[in-house]
Amino acid sequence: MFDKEYDVIVVGAGHAGSEAAAAAANLGSKTLLVTMNLQTIGQMSCNPAMGGIAKGQIVREIDALGGYSGIISDKSAIQFKMLNKSKGPAMWSPRTQNDRMRFAEEWRLALERTPNCDFYQEMVSSLIIEGDKVCGVRTSLGIEIRSKSVVLTNGTFLNGLIHIGERQLGGGRAGEKAATGITEQLVDLGFESGRMKTGTPPRVDGRSLDYSKMIVQPGDDIPEKFSYTNTKALAHQRDCHMTHTSTLVHDLLREGFDRSPMFNGRIKSLGPRYCPSIEDKINRFADKDKHQLFVEPEGWDTVEVYVNGFSTSLPEDVQFKALRSVVGFENVKFFRPGYAIEYDYFPPTQLKHTLETKLINNLYFAGQINGTTGYEEAASQGLMAGINAHLKVKEESPLILNRDEAYIGVLIDDLITKGTEEPYRMFTSRAEYRTLLRQDNADIRLTPMGHKIGLASDSRLKRMEEKLKKSDAFVNFFRETSVVPEDINPILESVNSAPVKQSHKMFKSFSRPNVTMDHMRNLKSVADFIKEEDIDREVMEQTEIQVKYAGYIAKEKNNADKLQRLENIKIPDNFDYRLLKSLSYEAREKLEAIRPVTISQASRISGVSPSDISVLLVFMGR
Image 1 (tube, rainbow, N blue to C red):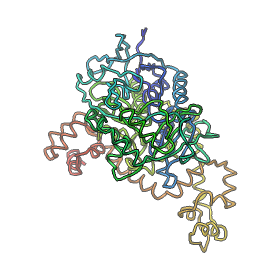
Image 2 (tube, helix red, strand yellow):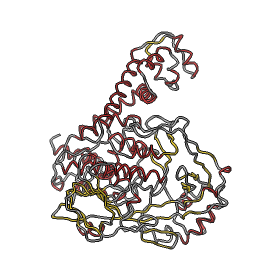
Image 3 (tube, rainbow, N blue to C red):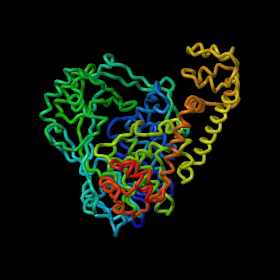
Image 4 (cartoon, one colour):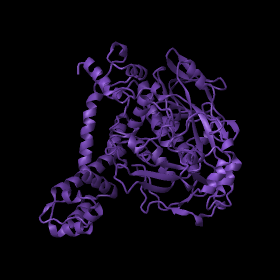
């Protein structure tokens, strides 16, 4: 059946696996995507949404590099929101509500249209290892498929165990069996593994809900989109709704705590801190008498509804009784109860920045196998693993994103440098250069990199260069064009800003708080420039940010440049930290385990102090 050797085999077809397969195949590698069920490619296992705080930036970065997640999200979107618009642009985060069935369908169609991508449906039970190198996979039917590299994206399927109350079911997702064999083989090879937990809420029948009792949550008046390509923004949208739990709901849930696997010891692994179950919320935040629930449609036409905020592993009768006491849910009908799932993961400190394992050459891990949670985090790792697997097979230099270049760079560096003992989720606060890493400039930051390796198309690069050219010209227009008091003062007074007494450059007035592009467009010279240069909304947004945050951006760039000097100081591959007696014991232990590539990476390891870094710098003649 498989008489040829593949360049890249990707195991698993979730968000990580789909991006990995697409990237490797589009770059020219002969790629095989192996999954236990071809009908669930690109499945949204939990909420029917993409993006959100920091996650939206990641989707934009995936798109800028030439990945598919942004395009798929746009094609299957039913609502768009730009979150955090009341805050600075570093916090703005795009989010789509998606049609779950169309999202998976679009992923499958996109992959089927991708040259070099083959498919096979079966469980991979082990890897073919020769020496310290992976050479393919072996399926549960005993079929051996050879390859030059393998990317594991097993999600929650490795020895997955589903919990509903006191019942336990083997499975990687509701209705799907767990994957066995791989964890045991990797542990035998010397890998460290652990267990993590995640959960999902009940799905309910929207026809049984009373939306008139809930708060409507509409999309943006002028919806944007994720992809920098020519995907279309939504012409119409579906509303979401919001309701709340109550003290009665909490009391009903507490009645089942003695049968909760979280509280009776059945679940020992840690779940996502920032997406806790409803029972965890009412236990940890006992002083709160209500919690928000977001009622999210699963698609354009289906009546199935996702109850965001009610993730639970309590017995189904407790779930049902409590949910029926929520306002608007008095007559709710269940499609299926919520559940928790435990699964195997491998602490990501065992990886290189390329996501290749340190123990076995040409073996890559991406997604929840690395301890992350979230579609976007998984997809970005899959993209980078697929890219780097291809580049290594072709004997080309790897693609590694720095912390000042992308949220994806922050994510991977955090994982391999600090590790994680609970499901890792990206936040804007994790990025020290978030003013540089905005959602609006992901294409400017990353499209040249994607184009250089051959993943981002010529048309993508041309579009980005045109946008950059126009925004630079518009910023220079504001820097160089003067405005007289009689023209600018009415605008300043309308926002309670002090009037000016003499002519000055527009840049100065535009930099003031509360003065927006909409105000400046009222000036005839600005309106004329916009018309003559064909400035669109995207360029206007980019220009406004560049003007109003020029000082912050310059400061962060300066800080990033300083840090880059430490990035340039490489640590030899086989450096023996035991030779440096001045290092603290903890630092020697951590440095030996993680094997940082640069002094900058060493400085970010928990337990390595500034004095330890000084010792390393002195030893290296700095």
